[in-house]
Image 1 (tube, protein in one colour):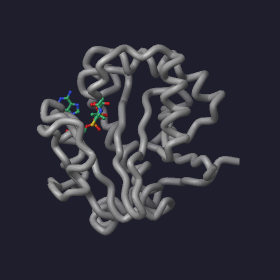
Image 2 (cartoon, rainbow, N blue to C red):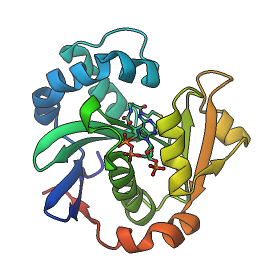
Image 3 (cartoon, rainbow, N blue to C red):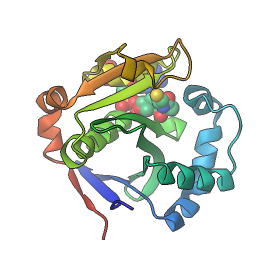
Length: 195
Ligand SMILES: CC(C)(COP(=O)(O)OP(=O)(O)OC[C@H]1O[C@@H](n2cnc3c(N)ncnc32)[C@H](O)[C@@H]1OP(=O)(O)O)[C@@H](O)C(=O)NCCC(=O)NCCS
């Protein structure tokens, strides 16, 4: 199994941390993640059709990781606030998704910061050349987040192979463009395999 990564960024006095959890850490986070996933707004945006119990969250993490996905818990000063992942890897690219779970923490710039942190790992640590996102057309905040970061519409076969529904919006961004726009912040991001 590949090393688990730990990604950190200090935003003024606040420590943002994204890390690939151990099975025990997933079990510890599962009840809270389940409540985030089951929030009506989040569930609609994430297209989860059913509620997920804490046990199902644990299973989902184990199965996804066994299938090659890389899942991260997101913490702000040690408090769990959401999760994110890279999935559908090929030799040089992957699909990315993120959830800032607590509704009162959405719209405060955390999605943008954690996404930049995880793209520092994806482009500089995992050496991906391109990252894709697929988004529901109704998910204005998410579309806006990725457009603001510099993502552009992508209707290539690879991008469209990632969709759930024909109406899904597909965007992507390559390493050079991300480095150009966000290199300065990426330089402040620390990532390393977990000990
Ligand atoms: C989508 C999501 C990840 C965005 O993260 P966030 O921390 O809320 O967003 P940010 O504060 O970083 O803002 C990013 C941009 O989206 C805009 N935005 C955020 N929330 C918004 C809202 N509720 N309505 C309108 N715009 C919003 C911000 O204004 C910002 O654009 P700006 O720089 O022009 O102001 C987060 O809201 C979330 O997890 N939602 C539920 C799950 C989800 O939709 N995941 C994405 C699946 S593709």
